[in-house]
Image 1 (cartoon, rainbow, N blue to C red):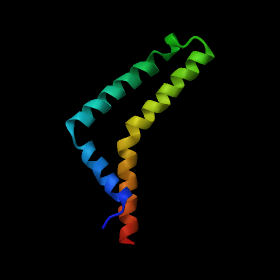
Image 2: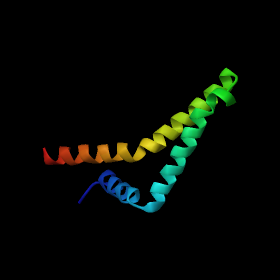
Image 3: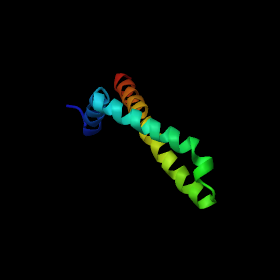
Image 4: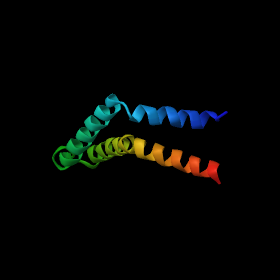
Length: 82
């Protein structure tokens, strides 16, 4: 029987195949692009820039989640094969 983390990875891989996930990520990518492109207009103080930077970093992590999860899954599969 597979361990819990392997099962969770497979559930996440299934999630990434759904249209809803693709729409969700496309929307986050649009928000990221808009926040980044407008930062020089919207963030006229260091404090505002730091808040924007935090939002951008959070979105980057979310956008990269699928790729990161697939990488972890592939590494786990390679470890099993070794």
